[in-house]
Length: 194
Ligand code: ADP
Ligand code: 5GP
Image 1 (cartoon, helix red, strand yellow):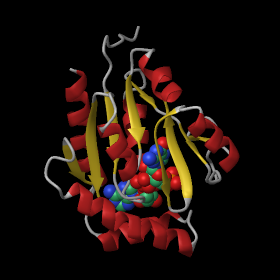
Image 2 (tube, protein in one colour):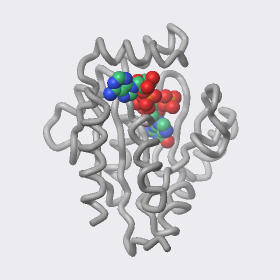
Image 3 (cartoon, protein in one colour):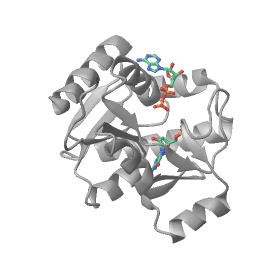
Image 4 (cartoon, rainbow, N blue to C red):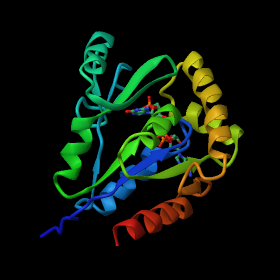
């Protein structure tokens, strides 16, 4: 029987698109299926091959997204590479009410908003070994158009500059070797739950 946590933490994972956040998180959820829940964000981008509505994201129209903004449904929301993304209050509650630690995977503007919210969160930044390697991973994933790759790379420079400001994150993990980076993430996050 899974034990629940009385005051489950909220953990915010961020880092440039293509750095390996989803890869690391998939593994963390597989290794500790009872401990965590993923905050399922809303987005106006379309689903990639293999993505399911309500699992990776709630895929919505720009009109629906604006309705949710007007209803104050979001803890934070931002535009990234021309699309809207947001974390709803309901998405976080769905996880924490089960006594599970809630993990958010969000970009920099969202991180800033969560920092200004009343959520008591821990902030983890996943950094690529270099911008060249990041570009290789983004291209290798094969999910983006050339225009989207360029937008994501220019956002990456800003995210790396932000993360370089001392104190913006509680933990920075360089995702060079996947095994090593995963172990560092697992140790840090399981330490928060102990
Ligand atoms: P993000 O969620 O941060 O956008 P992904 O998890 O989708 O990034 O990873 C982007 C690509 O990089 C994927 O094809 C993934 O398999 C690959 N990748 C992730 N981590 C590593 C790593 N440590 N070394 C090499 N490739 C990696
Ligand atoms: P992708 O389109 O690759 O799934 O995500 C693009 C970027 O949007 C990533 O940096 C991801 O962390 C971020 N993102 C995903 N969901 C949210 C969200 O709810 N809010 C914010 N601010 N960013 C998000």
